Image (cartoon, rainbow, N blue to C red; front, side, top):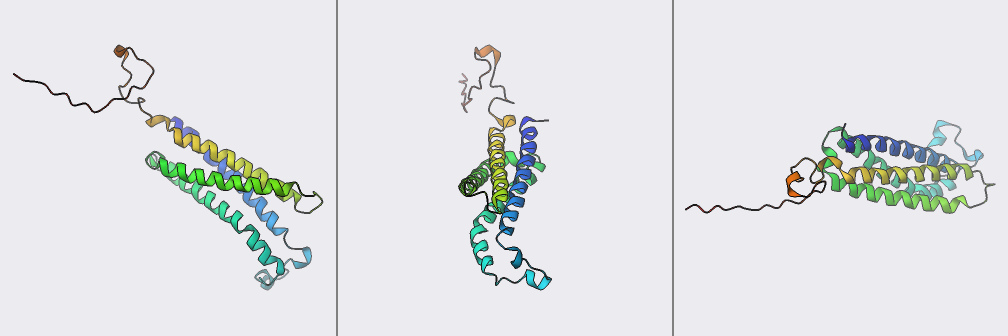
Amino acid sequence: MKITKGLTWPFLLFTFASLIVFMGALAALQHNCFTPAEQPTTTDAVFDFSSPNYGICRRNFRFHWFSFAFVAATLIGMMIAAAMGQGLHYSRPFWIGMLAVSTMLMMIMCETFTGVLHLNSAFGWYSPVAATLAGAVMTVTGLVLLMMAVGTDWEHRRGHHGNHDKPGSGVTGVAVPVQNVRVVEDRV
């Protein structure tokens, strides 16, 4: 098994599982916006968007759900590219950029929920905030590991497959860059 593929799949699965923890905790946190008296009891009431808390929750959590959707789309795309064999190698700069943006979005989530976590623990939403923060921190960790695994690309680095390390040249173990040099022979 190749090193990059061997590192990418476990990191992808860990990051995806962490993102699912984040999603579940965020859904539990958003569920706490409504008091038990406001919980829908019939199927018609489920789609009643006239609740005063609906607009507040929708506005407060839309950036968090956007961040979740962006990271999920990035991870699913990476899984498809990794399953195609050389897909991650050929589109590596794109995936590193997507991972960088995803990491920043999840770092913003970490900062947001760290600030909310320090509120009074007597509120009913203390546990979902802690779980959301834990999911965000695990997702950031997985995204950074993924960025390092995809960015390193062990199999295609210079000197790995080529004859750049010639024992007779006096330099061993170091990839010596080879330039396109045109050799012209004088024929007499």
